[in-house]
Amino acid sequence: MTSLEAHYSVRDVETRILAALRAAGLDPEQRLSPEVLGALDHFHTGGFRASRVLQELAQIRAEDRVLDIGAGLAGAARMLAASPGCRVDCIELSPDYCAGAVLLNRLTGLEDRIEVHRCSALELPFADDSFDAVWMQNVGMNIADKRRLYAEVHRVLRPGGRFAFQEMAAGETASSYFPLPWATHPAENFLISAEEMLSVLDETGFVVDFFEDASNEQLSGPPVGGAPEVTAQAQLSLSVYVDNLAQKAENATRSLQEGQIQFVRGVFRAKW
Ligand SMILES: C[S@@+](CC[C@H](N)C(=O)[O-])C[C@H]1O[C@@H](n2cnc3c(N)ncnc32)[C@H](O)[C@@H]1O
Image 1 (cartoon, helix red, strand yellow):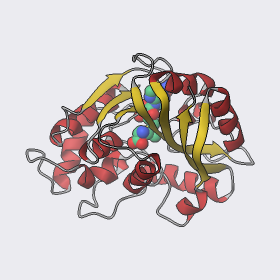
Image 2: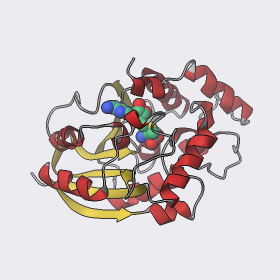
Image 3: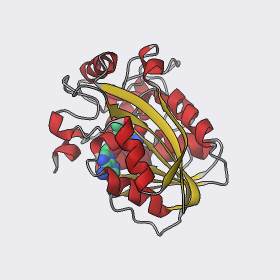
Image 4: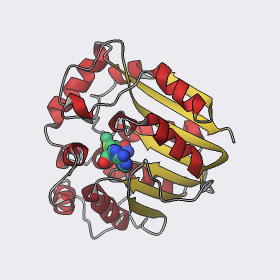
């Protein structure tokens, strides 16, 4: 197991999810809506609300075929499959998260619209020009080879297709507070600056539709990385499967406040 796989490995993930749902007063035998799961399954900065923002920016429509890269428990894929109602393929490296995603797809009745594939973002098992949109939230931070990552995204997008993403970028000084939600140790932390990101995206064949530094939005909002949704199911949290969550979220917020990291989001189009 690589150290990245170890970082995202979760023993008995299905049992943990079912226990958490019951503890939150939800009945897994009744169909669940993606919204009530938002605090559990949107493992990224800004939680469910940030996913809706990205959906609107990328103008994802029901007829779009979407690929969610590094989908985790596939919270965003279920959101898109439920409304606007797309077909979504998820790819994910961690077998535990794949198992959790398949379970939650079934409990929400969305398994017919979402397919989960266990593989790497650097070797996508899809033909060229397969997707209208590629979606990626808080994943690039784990991948050193950005050029290959963006080239794979570009290859599977049809010409003019959208690449919608959010992630952390490197700030003016190096990250010094660990563990972070995406990296237990510095060796797992593969941030590049926003400028480098724009440059590699341009070189791999993308043109910018929208790009912003949304760090201030995060600093004035709920804690980074563990943003709990305000729902009746307040007990649901990423801590069901992320250990040491409070410290990781605090370190991320501190890193953002001190300019060691930046929170960015963008929508880019494949040029050819
Ligand atoms: C912080 S989680 C984000 C999960 C999901 N995108 C979300 O926002 O809820 C990062 C995810 O990226 C996955 N990941 C990291 N590197 C990957 C790679 N090379 N290929 C596929 N998945 C990867 C991890 O296993 C983990 O599930």
